[in-house]
Length: 475
Image (cartoon, rainbow, N blue to C red):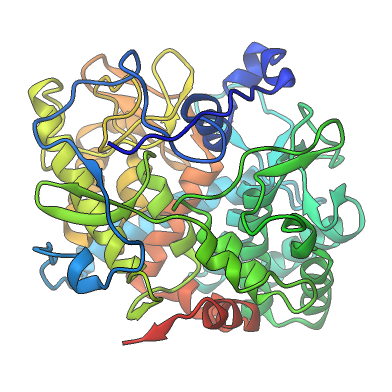
């Protein structure tokens, strides 16, 4: 087992959080608190769930090994084609998910709620810039799928970009993680977030490439060119998780494989303040092995294999380290096998019902759980976005799970699609949907159906330039 030193850094403002805020902690904050700053760490015995016999472990190996060596004895999914029934089901999922972004977005600011209560709870005022990034992309999908008129969508996009450019507080072009949905005011002493800004920028680029309206293009370019990636990498090749005016740069660094790929690629592709090419090689790629399958991973939930690939199209491409689309396919299959192995402790898990990633929990906490390796106090909870975010990687298996949830667990479905999590063993169903989880499900459903998000986003010069500078080649 590879071990990493913990920094021991704990934010003072985290200790002062109200109960309401603790229910809204993002997965990245939780991973920083639980797994340690700067990398994804294995949890101590008190946090580990029951470990299966085929428990995953990192393999000591060169990070530059060839695919033939890394992906030895590999799993290859069977060829898959969507049936009309599959397509209709995914359209239902996407349409419901779109309603979240439309109804929970402020039409004047374009900002999107971090989460929403689907059982009629009070409306919040907390917007997430990551949810807003997913929401901007959702407006493109909604227009293409005719869930909304093009004129209404463009009006919302223009309002969002105008607000982002002129009013939402920023530092060197990076935005605070959470903001008041009506005023843009910083909420909860939140950090200027590097990765959440990256998700927002992906949404902005998608809108620019899809709508091509002169005002949209102009505002998008102004926002993109303001982002000073060279400031974020001023004294290091490893980007910081963020910055606050109270403490400066956070000590946590994006230094191990995770959702960081989108951030480094956007920085490499910047036309105004680009990162040095060396930054792509600076972060580490640990190789894990489980049940005979090898893949690059982290001590982290499944979402780390999904987020960058909602926008960046890695299909048929590789850098000198790996084919990351194939890698995420293997990681999803490993997670499926891991959950089925856990059915010995949690009989709800099966080939038709699996999927654990960072989510709400029955006691109302936000929990970083998943595996392998087993992470967090796994209790039989199912998180629909675990499969939703992996739809293009393992279509047959993930679709089977989502259909099972839709047909057998009615309380897990809402006007905004799947609730964030539920536990069949205890009959607990979340009251909330969370924007980033609803978003990853919607985007990946559309990518499976048509490749729409990939096709539009990759038309951006910043995206193609970033991948070229990182050394990606088709093969």
